[in-house]
Amino acid sequence: MTAAPDAAARPSPCPAERFDLRKDIQFETTVTSARFNDESGRWLVAADRGDLVSARFLITAPGIRSTSGRRRPVRPHEER
Image 1 (cartoon, helix red, strand yellow):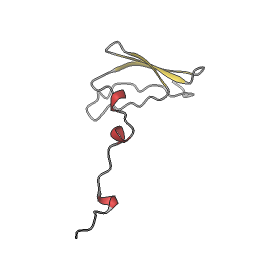
Image 2: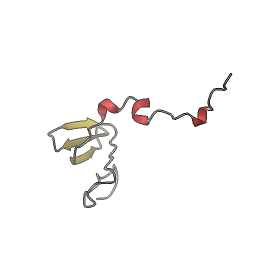
Image 3: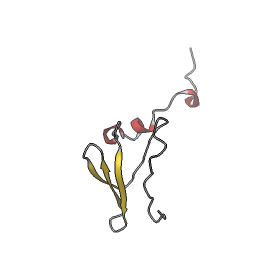
Image 4: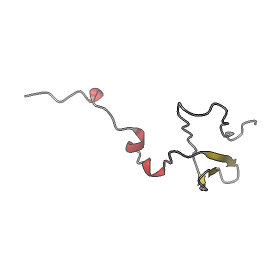
């Protein structure tokens, strides 16, 4: 009888799968503007494909190939 593999040795699902985020991820998309609205406590995000999204959280994932000259969005209560 073989023992079950140690739980620590088993790969855990990636966060996108574990939290069912894949439906909310847009790859190959450039954010053209991201502004935080203090009144609503939400981000208003515009993308190069014409999308306009209101979100409680904004997670940018530019990746290793990103152009170094791109700006990141200003965080709530942060100086420009």
